[in-house]
Length: 424
Figure 1 (cartoon, rainbow, N blue to C red):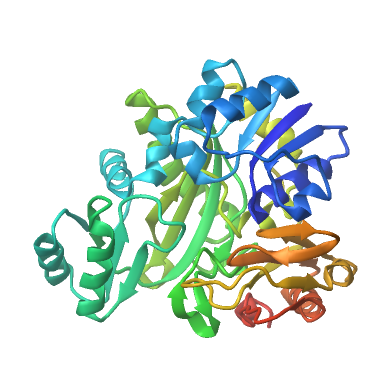
Figure 2 (cartoon, one colour):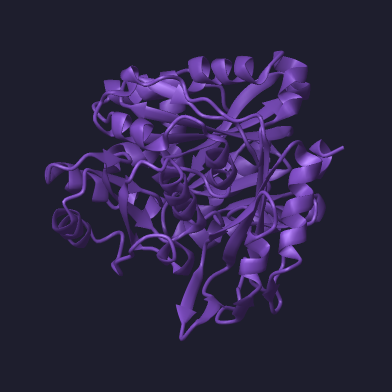
């Protein structure tokens, strides 16, 4: 199959590695890609949100399937343009992508579909923000309505800081003030063709920059999968997945279809377990594979990814088996640039990746890298993911952190506690 993968991050690198790992002879091209992706497949420089450029590339390459990785092209309507041109696309149209592009839209869909979530108020002025903060109380959860690259959310007990965060984003649209929910967070992916919904395996993401969940929110500093502690309240991981499938994913997909905006692609459910872990509530939805969870969910996937994504893109997901996963434990740790997330320092050299990738059970996915005259450079905040699989989390963590110790990036930072609680 000829496949075009849109995007330039570690998520897209993970998708490409999974497709290549099938050994099915796929011909893959990525746009715009990064240095790591370019080492595996051909890349084409273009703006992934430019619908005309993407359609022209898909036509020139005569692709069978387009996989849209990041959220920005989805919200920009690139999927719509590709479908109008006759291509099979894994990724929702602009209207359905609003499940991520607008938190207010997502809350309305959840309400219509009777999906369990926290209370929330929409605020369009600073006065409305203040009233909502006082109604819901501290800790305060303040969210920009639109896309903010993982940085539009603030959780704080400081009312002044909450107001300042809201004011920063009010010019771009309304603000959502949400009820604070306390508990373990879980990320769970669902494939959808607009009707049929199939689940993948759950993961846990670490959003905060520093160990012990300190510091600012980020796009994600690491993740692990599977989640053995789900057994405590749900009896098994399968029982937990089934509950989320039937009470969250399927109702949302049905509601979107009923509104004439069928969701075709990857529905990411960001969940929290409250009431001591016994009750599931939705924090947010994304309209694409999550990052960094994709980097540890896909390496455990035993069912060929290409067949699942093509079936979703063509309305044939009902013909596919429920995806199966390896029992191996997977851990990923993000290496970030100095100053991330507020003001990352980029342009610094990277060394040691070959040695890191040679550690047993380890591979590296590139997030923001470029190769110039034979030297690898960091070009963004989150630079790469070290991914490690092992027979248990202790082995997987040991591999990941050993490999990280072999990588050199001036000022580089990473968390040291990813999956520590499940490695004992």
